[in-house]
Image 1 (cartoon, rainbow, N blue to C red):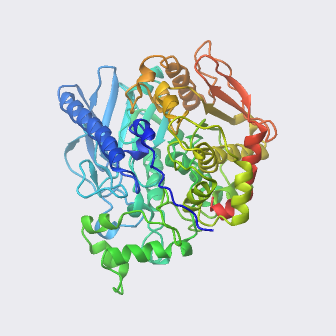
Image 2: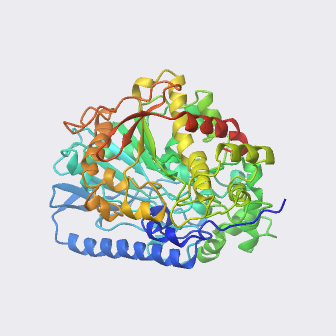
Image 3: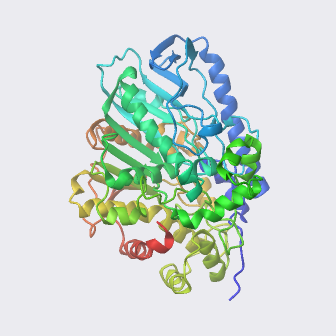
Length: 573
């Protein structure tokens, strides 16, 4: 059968919401021009806002920290929160350090201002130069209460941003609001890590002369940096909670299984919004990506291809940092560069690790939005287009498996501004890539009798613009309710009719950071958040503005998640 290919963004109704989805802020392999311009507008707005803010900060009181390798001077914000921006946590990953594990920073004399964000890491398909992006990008930002000391030992919130492993899509989210909302009882940390070709180039040649999964190794070094230095900001190095959104949430899931689930005491709890499980192949299956990169960079015929690639200028490598169809396919997948199974840090597919109990047993809080796939799915009109889109993203799917998929995801009621099979495509992609990973990880914790310290949620707060566009409650839409209004890109509804959800959610999250339990410091009249329970019950909290409550995962979603779990090796999840 010949399948018709439909580009995922052939849908002008999605433009409005995609302006607010952070992973789209830099570039998307197959985005239409109008969407790219909308996304660029968001980036420019936030860069300008940050620049003006940095100028204003010159007049704020200063505060210093000695990290041993460098002295930094940050600001004391009017709220009484210390803010340190753009501090190095690793040596620049340039030249001979490309595609190697990050190294500690070189010592620097004198005092360096820490009042502006450092550049973020180069995104897939971004042109070079692009303002605010650079290869030298391993910087950390810290917000902490003023007048803390190393003896303060405040809980630490370590945030891992998302971006599909192709961009730093949530850069420079401001942690001052959550520090203030906690009663100045936490320290918040955010940072950049390598993405795309720079962070996830995979080959046996990289293994031999470099390090696989460099982007994840950046994250590991950040955890060790926190362990070493966070007490200087008043944080407790023995009470760190890692938290990620999207690819950051996927990273959290991978760190829980790192080195076979070996607990290196880098964190005591984990939170994840929209756990992201794209295909994460074994190294031999990614040699074609390396070969294509070497060819595009002019290193195809070189005996020392790694040396050749390290010798190329940034522009040449960045031009090769692009998406491409998987072998045998016609259209680009959403996510071309992803972590690989390296046999060391990532020893097997994530589901296999969780099934074997090879994960760190710490309290966890995982969840998703109701309609995770709506901003990713192709606007398809037929079954054939639905199948084709899924195979473009998960290319090992067989005809028998796609037939079963069509049985699990029949034609659903139409949505505004979309073709007939969009709702089914959105549900299938959203569940296999985001929703089912969270549910299945919760079940793995239940299987280890860890039900008393596992919480889950479904965010179902409606937005009129999303509803009119047929997007439902899309991917990471809950972010402003967790970090605070204008701490990250904020839809207008959170400033008006959805505003009451902000303190409710923020305090549940802060409570988990402080006590490893969302109920310990929740708002006084907030509902009790029950744990996940057994794999049979699957209880999660539903955020719905005026109807916050517990629910059990419905049997239909349980069945569909069981289907995806049963073919996880084919999906490379």
